[in-house]
Image 1 (cartoon, rainbow, N blue to C red):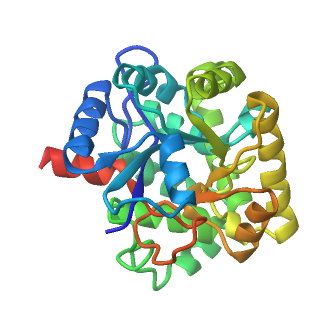
Image 2: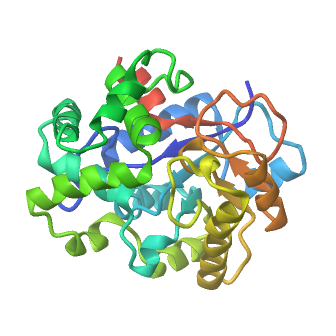
Length: 309
């Protein structure tokens, strides 16, 4: 066992944040923290970072990390952390803070509120694909696809999850995927502009997190799902703009990051080092390297599955 981070994303309540795939309630979060505290050494973010940099982490030391700068994290999880006196890493991508729509989160919200379950969305998505002239290319790329082999390192994914992610990231790519999703959303009449406040934090939230002693770190500018497919110069711009935004808001230079969707390569690691980043978190527990830029994380869904079994 190695020291690791616990990776958290979505939370739901009865008011502003709908329940969706993988989302947990405040009560779930309390139970999750109880489990971690009873089985591991839960360390505050700054202390965990200092121990990592001095090579003094114990194998059972765990930290909390929140990805994507989501408002539900601030509204639902942060009060629990404050009551317990726990600080965490918060990895945010910056485009949404500049008024740019974050499609990854927007699309997730759409499928959460517009479909009874994720399976219904996946089925409708593939139905809608048939209306586009690139559908034949998608069918060709799906030949020989084996769901058990794609993203096999992520045990939390179902076969449908893997198929959808393969279509999204490999068969379609960003531009064509956005065409399909934007068409579905347009037909559904969703008001995108009204969603900013309920989906993402703002800079006031980020400043408050920093003031409370949490560690705010990098997560790229626009959160590409396959960052490793970008050129070195494109990756640099992703992280440069992200870095400058966080430094401007918090007043300090960020030295921690998490790789969006676990996607990175040697260029990414070099860019992070160039920016002065000391710690980088992956999105699974399979990393065998000792590099501090490739630290393992456990998805909260894996532990919640244990608690519910």
